[in-house]
Image (cartoon, rainbow, N blue to C red):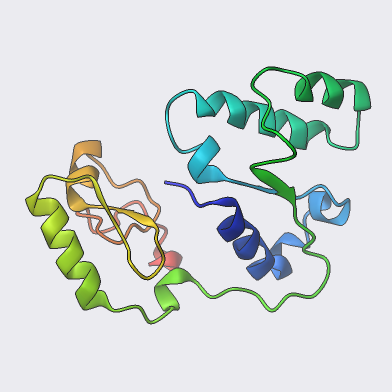
Length: 163
C-alpha cells in the first residue's frame, strides 16, 4: 500500500527530527512522492513512478539529464506526484493515523462487511484511505511487516519495537 503525496509530505515533516540527520535532507534533496498513484499499483503508472524517481535523483545535479527525463512521453506534468520536502526547518509534526482516535467499531463493521463480500479493501470514512482486509492479507499468504490494521498473521514480521 502507499499514501498520496499530501500524506507523505505530512509524514516526512512529522519525522523531521529523524530525517534532518540525513545527508539528503541537509543538502535539500529529500523528496516525497505519491506512492499510491505511482509506486504501489502494478500497471502503467509504475512507468511514471520510475520517471519521478529519475527526476528526483537528478534534480539540481545535471540539467541535461533532468531535461531528457522530463521530455519523455511518460513524464508526469509539472512535478505532479512528487515534491521536495524541507525537514530542516521546525515542524509541528503529524500524529500517527492509529493515534487519531477514529472509531474502531466503525472499522470493525466495515471490515466485516467487506470480508463477507470477499472484497480486498474498504475505504475508511475518517481518512478516505483504502484499508486492506483480512481477505487481501490471506491472499498474500504472509505478514508483510507493515503493521497492517487487519493482519491475520499476528504482525509476525513487524519489528518488536513497533508492535
